Amino acid sequence: MKIVQCSLLLLLLILTPYSVAQAETQIINQTTHPSLVERAFLRSLGTSVILDVMSSHGDKQQYYGPRIEKVIRDDTNDMYDISLRVIGFEGPHNPPYTLIKMTIRIPGNDFSSYTVLDYTHNVISSNEAKKLLKFAPD
Image (cartoon, rainbow, N blue to C red; front, top):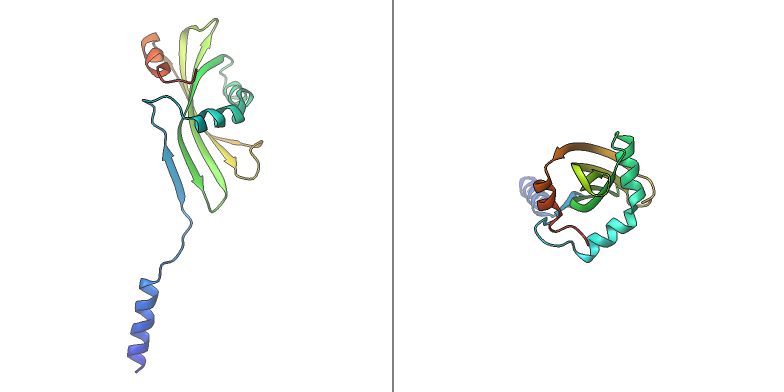
């Protein structure tokens, strides 16, 4: 009898769905124009956050063409990791152009505080910049 009860209990534990909070990832299509939600999020993030991150990493320049590439939501810790890119430039939208990629962690309860998880910048050609800006926000 105990073997049957133990077997049933084991089977029940195996078959019972359990909830494990996981990270949810969304990759944003870069070959279409940004959605209304992406534009709204970029606006709420504000140019000051992007410029502050760039400045703190030695890129004291302007940017345009921001795009969100990926969003990861960590449900367990209530955080969002936002990976985005911008095209940096000096002067009136003239070369040299810099492709700047950054990943920012934003707590779900306080969008005014953030942590920079990753930051890269590479000089790119005018043709590369043109391709990246094809689907940038207006």
